[in-house]
Image (cartoon, rainbow, N blue to C red; front, side, top):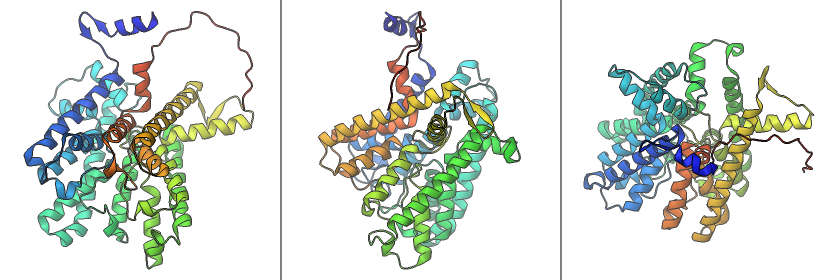
Length: 450
């Protein structure tokens, strides 16, 4: 009965009323469909691509993942590459954010329904200050992409010529800031492994993009650590910690590996690659060395970093840094016999901890279930398939060579993971669950755990 009432509440007066998370999921699906149609146009490709190729590439672009089944640099025309870049920007910026920017530029009013959808798209708990946040997002995106474009042009224009070099610089700047990982080079950024400018610009773009627009807005309005919100403090501290773990761990595990760092001649080259490969699993997706040649320990570390991802309201995916940190804080509080959760002088409500548990449980269930299907349908190594699943769920884009060999079933599973990773695992709950207030309250009883 509760399920029937929940479904009936979606239809009133012959009109379907969907909650914001569900509607946003349908909007992203619609954008993927439009992108696939555009990529199937003869003008979009140099070689003939199938509908399966087009849908996969469009899904990867809209979800800002970067996994590819065709080489966009050699198999897509400039028009097709521009479609990919546009899908990346729309997917990374957020459809409702883009819509509000357009409405504001046209001087049209933005009503409460639009604000509610925007609130869900940006992961905010309140509709207040949303328009200010949208303004900050637009300014940050514009400045970051244009600055990255200008700096990358100093490297790519001399190498490729004026027109092609400018286009490559713009494409990679858009892809990097949106944590997409798409590259027009067949070897990603391996050719720039020891180039300081490319290493600094690309990583700066995807780290800033992965912090989250809420953090960037807070940094622009407040001065000093004490004035920052708890969310900003957690994101800055968590990001710094994960960067150190990622870069240091990669260097430690791969230093003498002849297939990765061991093949590089100098200390500087190894440090640059360690830095890049240590931060790129946080949903960026570019690589400057052969990820298929990594040792199993490094592969496992990369999988963990990919699942954690970046920050909420960002261009990154994963369960998010704040989710990971709250899980660690809750674990520490349990062992300290604390009944309240605190961080940086702020208390954390119980409902936040419950949301963390839901995110981790749903995320793990989705990854494990999808991996089970991949193991049954594909011939790849188990660790390689786990790497692929984690990369898709975290909307990262790193691969150990499995993507191009996927069957149609495998492609469908990876597309599903990319889509869920972009719209958020909790969105799935809005389709599966109905809120029903309890009619009876029962006394609590002890349960033996562990």
